[in-house]
Image 1 (spheres, helix red, strand yellow):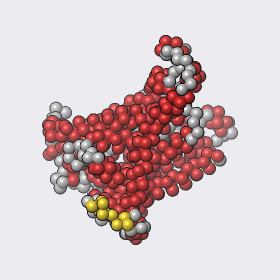
Image 2 (cartoon, one colour):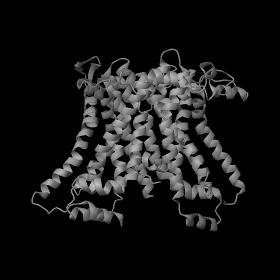
Image 3 (spheres, each protein chain N blue to C red):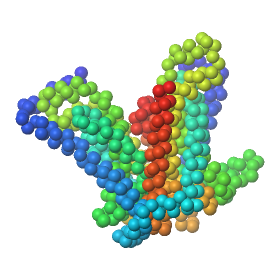
Image 4 (cartoon, helix red, strand yellow):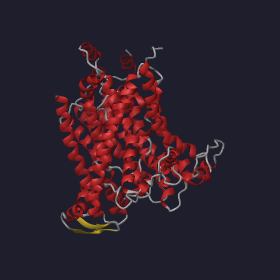
Length: 272
Length: 311
């Protein structure tokens, strides 16, 4: 144990203040999930009863298909984005082709595309393909919006694979696909998993595109949750329970992967 | 070396053939081309189509009856009071929240940096990061709940401390203040992480040399720490500006741009044109302008970043 300095006490108090500010609103909503509607809107506030789970059961009874949609879309988009991004990133790092730098820059620049600028065109494309209100459309759209990020951050991990190892295997007659699948990928798997987790969370959190591309059947969980508030009456009981469910994956992710968050959110520009 | 061991075991040795080069090219194309095509389909084509729509008077319901109007959608936008308010609100939101995020992020980073000898502080730091990855829509829901004028905990606490309750989303100024607060709450941790990474990378001998010269703590902050974190903070600010231009989910569930047009932001404006009024020509013009602003601001900020890094 290091020695406690006088100023450590003040610093610790400040740190606790920051933590309280960050966590309290989330915690307050989470506590609400275990209250009755009357409890949720009671002033002064009441303490929740953690055995009261009616909010969750009512929410899921009516809305589990939409939670399922969210899970399918998120997993599908993550897999599709990674399948398309990893070979691309591998190629950009290892192929000695003219224009790879320009290609990488172009991919980075597509990250600038605001979802709102793509929303109407995607709406039209998917309507013409008969994929409106279909989870497939969301999987494709989310994958597309995450590829720039996934390619760039994967590149920074794939660059760490020693070139000599790849060249030796190449001399032995390995194809590029074998190099990727049997050498580069296993050697950078922890980084690639980090990237995939980010794509998962970004897709899980997405709202605007789903608002444009779904109407009934394919609605994702956030879209349904948003309807609990917009119809004149506000269903705080459902909102509180839904908030807990919706926010759980990002919370777990943050607690587990906080070491990688800096490099993830800055597209690898800042190392942690 | 494990990699070498893998090599020895797993690969059949194939002799180089004449077709090798062609096969090589084919493989490389197979790895990169599908992704390129996919990106063209999902970003370039929509962008071109958006520009096309922005030059037409066209309804979402009757897309095949588009009438070419040249730049009229753009000129109309720049004389539309609502859009100008949306631009101004977005600028205010960006400047206020990003400034506060940088200041609070720096303060928090300093605190966590000074405490980094203590292992358990890592737990506190993780908890502080929670808002950052939280689903923006749920952040909006939480805001709607805690800022609610009658049932919200914020007003309850204000009254408990002897203040007068605020009708948060009911008044233009407080509604905007609430939006800034929500952004600051969610994204200060991001600035904290960036600043902390930069602070950690300052070499110890720099501090030692400064102490030997008799520098006070504010000298250290001003002459060593602020210059060291400047470039990452700028990078963070660039990313945040792009984010603020996309700010949507929270206003969508809390104020819908109101009261009046006090919290109307550009993305919400484009959304309402597209889906409320079905004027996709106008909506697309707004979206193209949002992209244009992103590009201009980013280009400028990246130039600034280069200057800072070279200095």
